[in-house]
Image (tube, rainbow, N blue to C red; front, side, top):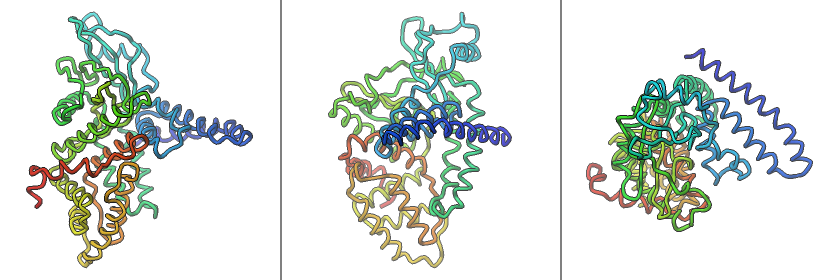
Length: 423
């Protein structure tokens, strides 16, 4: 695996070099016309081509970047949008062979393919529309050939790079290695459709009212093919054509579902980029793709509840207590009053902020920096929950900046089910 990882990293570096060289004409035109957007568009197109050739890890990074229209230039974001669910699909021949390995000869398949052009294609799989003998529409998520080995190799070289980054002064306050150790197994499971079928069933029970997840068809699911009822969204939730009231309703439903997953069930959808979130004309949300999910333990849920409660109630003593509870090690001579004072400053900065002002990643950075200043070794055992919130944030900050993350959390924080063991 290490040899494959080294080969893939070398390939990606070479592809990156070629992509950089192809940008030279765009750089010249941009300078001559004094139009930076020309270069941004060329960079976006080059990055899309690079990611599609490099494979799942780079495509996933591009999906995350494309979800942050609030942070990145629009000219760069526009080309990246296609990697969310319109990545280069496998050939029809490759899809036929994958289905043949899963179900046997085509004449024995228990469904008929509507169209060999996928309705969606991402970094791990492509989705085909099909029909059962009785006419019921289903969707088949077909894993790309060889993607499992590529994901495992990509995780190896990403681990190498993060290990190097962790030594840099700028990243010493952030526990990159611990966070990667928690997230890597989640990413590695994305090519196992039996795992995803179980995840889809669990998420469907956790999502709550107004959030639809396509029902799994277990009898037709295989290790490399996930079978689901076909649920076609009227729009992506982030589509500009979605009326503002419908969009805002969908965002509130999705945030409530996310809080329910994090604080109540402990089973969280961690891939809420725009390609995986649709809506209907009533504002109901349709969630797709259950490959990237995470368990949040009861102990970690209690810490998260405590942190959110401290932020929403501006309680520095409780914030300090939860910061210490989430740590791996604490110095024996720690000045706890100093930690409380620093927590008070942190709450002054972040409490009461709405989506337009509140950055999950920046809050977490400040928490890690606080721990680092006091010699506390951070242990981000709930990194997946933070990842999920930060991804959701990218859906809403640009168009719904007044959404109050903290107010929306209160019904879950005051629930007796959540806080009885902590107070």
